[in-house]
Length: 275
Image 1 (cartoon, one colour):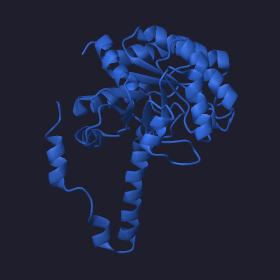
Image 2 (cartoon, rainbow, N blue to C red):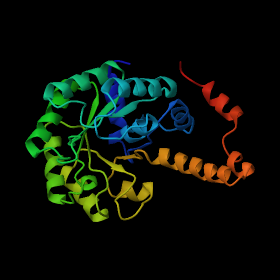
Image 3 (cartoon, rainbow, N blue to C red):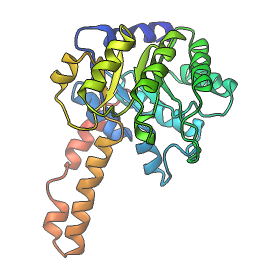
């Protein structure tokens, strides 16, 4: 599907009544499971991808090419629009960000997220002007062929400044970001303030505000247009694995090996690949 057509299809999911729930896959089978469940789009998770490779998220330990290959795999198997959770755009310069967006378009992604993070633990959030210019560079490179999400990580980087968060998101919208995203606002009032300030640009929420997990209907009522899950489905799966390993260490083979997905089910899903 040409980039502009894919862009229109993906954006339509954001602008319709209710928006969309966009879960994040971390491997081929999880992508197939989400497609089989009926979701209309999926995303990568930079944190889950990094963890599967034994690396840390947000420290430039996963390369752009590795993430692109991963995203192409998910999209090919699921046959769904894929949004790439591409950290800070994979590079220090504006040209790097533009090159990442162009590579994402060429890889057939429907969307790409660019954060205002730096990968530097001593200065995790980029200065305002630099962050805005990087989103502008992403939008200019996108040319209406891929949905650009402008994201600020203030809240998850220890900067609980709602005013600065809204200032950044508003500026991202002004330079053309299609979707806006600030993971884990402190509460519902803060979330509503964000949604109101940047309207009509769609807002993505990572599960919920940080103080309480809401329902999809409650988030939709607050004006949220996209709900993503980041690495949390992956951590749910890893939590089940940890419980199984504890049972195994205790010598309880039955608890360690029963209750999981059958290979018949796995093969059924694999048989549905679009490849």
